[in-house]
Length: 222
Image (tube, rainbow, N blue to C red; front, side):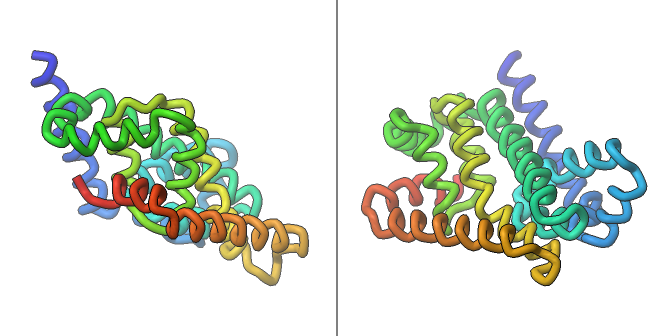
């Protein structure tokens, strides 16, 4: 009965996701002018709506960089970075918890080797390793969230590592959305610094055999 209820809940979520994408219910989140007008006319309530819509947008696998660009245009570089990172973190949380509550048991049986491999790799220094995976220029954000949820890693280091790993790219794209000409020198320096740091870490990990194993564990689709 429990398994049947879980599969029913998962089927309902898949249906909602399909209808959302098929009917374009979230298309507005990719339109910077529409988002900017909505935020400026709806105040705090608009921030809540856009944050939740952005969480669903990224949770369904849409590019979080696009969300950062749109919110950077609407709110400015730093505010756009903060709100888009928050939305992406909420989206990752939703995917993680959905996978843990609804998919972990059946997928662990079906893909036991991959789940065991993921657990071994992330058993120690989980936060740091999740951070490194988020900084790598490979893999799927959606697949990473689902695989992590189906594994045995703890939620808190997954969330903190993901959030920190999101920040560099979110900052760069939010500043791009805000307009390079309107960003002050300090904002540009921070953006460039974060981008260089993320790129160096990603390059180092990519050429490291252990990092390639980490990337492979989340790059292949289930």
